[in-house]
Image 1 (tube, rainbow, N blue to C red):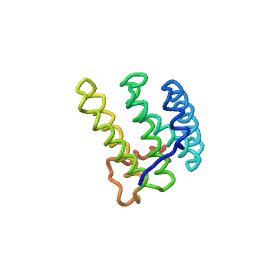
Image 2 (cartoon, rainbow, N blue to C red; image 1 turned 180 degrees about the vertical axis):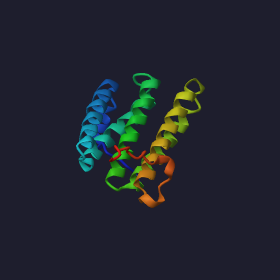
Image 3 (cartoon, rainbow, N blue to C red; image 1 turned 135 degrees about the horizontal axis):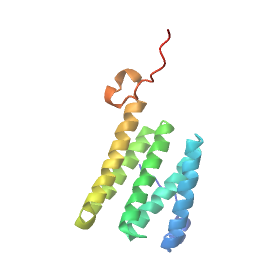
Length: 156
């Protein structure tokens, strides 16, 4: 599976200028997030996918700096995974998890950013584990991830 969202022309145009890529990333992530909030996950995936691709580019360029770039990449991956899960496409969500975790693992070689990168990998993995637990049938859910029951007032 190869998830590509940007066409070749847009990829070249956006990746020729990191500021342009940052602006497009922000616009597309905001639009995708808004669509998710409205429950329109199918329409959100292309926006979030383009943002994810740009976040990968910006991470490789360290633009505007490593800390911001790695957080953007992690947020983009997390939102794209969630949109796929909401659409029932867990295979696509898992593919994003594996590819983004692998991408982040390559950054672990830079010891000056090791802790932040490791935290980002844990964030993706934890988000995937929680989402999987809630998408499982109720009888197979682990009690440790179920929401607490609401406490109503007792009748007298």
